[in-house]
Length: 190
Image (cartoon, rainbow, N blue to C red):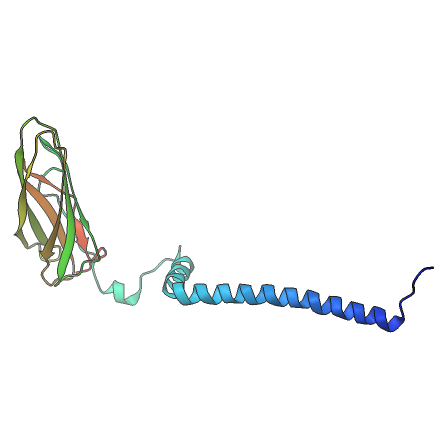
């Protein structure tokens, strides 16, 4: 015989099902809220910068602070990037660099291979992009073994105070070649 459920029992079953469904939705909402809170806590600065960049994209005009400053002029290379046995020179900051502080850099020189060993010497040229003043700072010398094609060195360069500097590595031997400039800060104003 078919079993009948009293009306009160159906209401109780419906209430249990509703509570279980609400519990699942509540749990899903709590997980989503926790993930959002964690993201905002860990990436707050990056999110703010990205939102500011997106909101300002395409808008004409210059901020009042930047309007009173003039962009630092570009840097003319003091020597070619590649010449003779030097196929290329590169200079990279290993961490953020600031005027008036020590700057840790990586020097990379690509060489045409040759059978015998040879010395590779370099200096750093520091340019003040606002005044045009330049001075050289000692770099180093490394003997590259025969067949060697790449020289890599980590150096620390003491930067003078200034608003817009550029650092260039210049090879002295086996040929005079220059890296593209490392701008400190990247967007310097005079």
